[in-house]
Image (cartoon, rainbow, N blue to C red; front, top):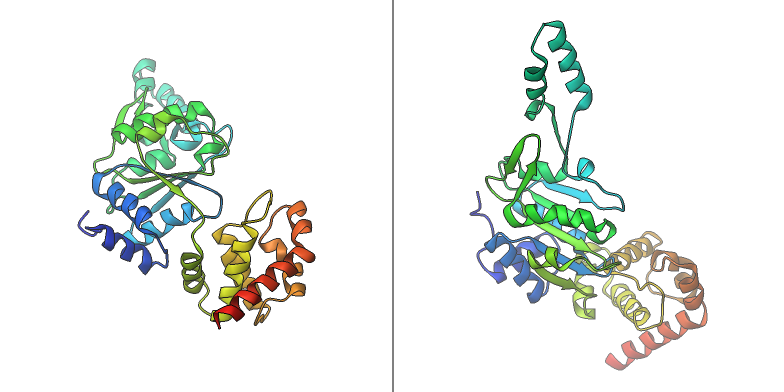
Length: 303
């Protein structure tokens, strides 16, 4: 069942690369160790740097189901792990009463798997032909009590249900936790995981990512796009564009039959890169023209 997992760091990079995910050695090492040691992987970084995509790619590469739990403020156990089917339990009680069954016996029989509704965390522990990839996405959006609930899952790959007992995975799922660092996740969670900070890639790696994701884009346009985005990341913006925005912008420009960047095209499509009006207003016009001029000078110098 686990034989198809990569046996080395190099093989891990190749596995990800086959799904067009360009990982550096540090990330490939963390993924390899998480798979080899059976440890959860905690991936933290800015939005749009490929954290969620890593889980998607691993599930495809390993032929495993992706079970995703999207975190949010107020997330509770009933939504994340399990809940009892109270409507069905009530019907069972009434049926038992009608049949003259002992009330206590009837109630005791209500807390079994027939009435248990499995949510993402519990589903990941149930038997699968191939261990699933459990993505706990944007944990920093949830509340601290929910982090405490996760500790048993991360430690023992099990969940204790007071009315039922312990449900433990026969083969542990691959757990990937992501955080955009809108708040600090408790050390107790991080200590149970392999930690990986996912930063913006350098220009060469981002260029490779865009080429793989948008192969129709010409080499010249791709280089201009990556250079422009890297120029933006050096400016004082409220929210810097991530790799996902770079890819999205490239696809949009191809749709518009753009051959090369020009000030007018940049000004009218900045909403694909920047998600705050103050940032768009800051870059439109003179700043965009300056970045394009700098790119042109650099390309001329290379020639």
